[in-house]
Amino acid sequence: MKPLTDREAILALKNAQLEAGHLVNTRKTYRGWVMRYRAARLARQCQDLQSYLTHLSTVERVNPKTVHQALNALKFYHEQVLGIQIAPNSLKIPKKNPHKNIPVWLTHEEAMDLLSHISGPARLQAEMLYGTGSRINALLTLRLKDIDLARGLVTFRFDKGGKSRTVRLPSYILPRLQPHIAQVRQQWEHDHVRGIACPSPEPSLCKKLGRRTFTTLPWYWLFPSATLRGQDRWHATDRAIASAIQAAAQAAGFTKRITPHTLRHSNATALLDRGENIRRIQEHLGHTHLETTEIYTHAMGRESLISPLDSAPPARPNITPFRRLA
Image: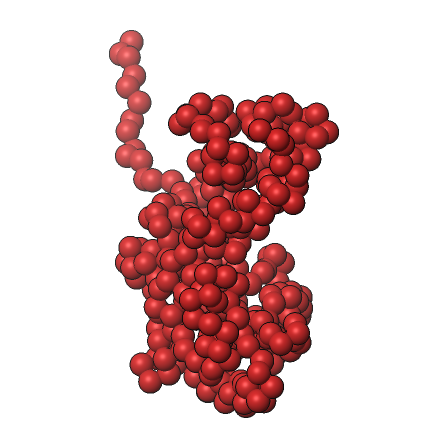
């Protein structure tokens, strides 16, 4: 079989992933690993998939979790593009670290202090992140049809792993959300006259629904980008909110490293602190495994031992020592 060029390999990989129904982020990740693997083969850093995985873990010192990600991508590439079947458990890879990193989180008071230092659209985005516990990408890809103001609900579609979930909108944000939607509607009216569309990054969905569907009001972004790409308007990026949160953290004097994802962690710990059932929180956050949600109990230090400095030693009975008779 004639070796594939980079262009042919990526095109074949793209077609295989579209057929498998992979999401955009997964397609990007797999494409990146395939290009890195092909470059390593060309530079003679490895001879096959096993030697490349060994190179990642021993030479480049890549995190075991990332090596497993590379394995998933390259196994798909070998089997679906090159037609080379890989037997289960035939590759030797480092074990994943069973101890997950403890996430950074804010107390409710700290979160509200942070929000008070943010203004503009970033304020609403930050409030929704903390209020709903959503991921930043799921928030920014919301469309107007995903907001149900009458019932106070928001539906996050095609979240991590392709899952969708509906959560309750905090009534706290409604005074800011309603005028925002009114402004977005005015912007849609201006775009609609010019034939501007808000397409989906999923080609199969675009083909199924047609371009005209993505010019209608329900499919307009909740947080549209300020710039156009030709006749398309995509959603806002996470740069503005990340910068706003970083500036707010500095203004509030926080020493923690705070990112948009910190607000999702803070949502989970606030629910735990309120006494919510951990399985309900698991469903609320969209976690597949309960172990992922349980990490927040460790983050809150609920299982930590009390320091001897903070507790007096237990009282001991006053026992007279036994003395031998002369």
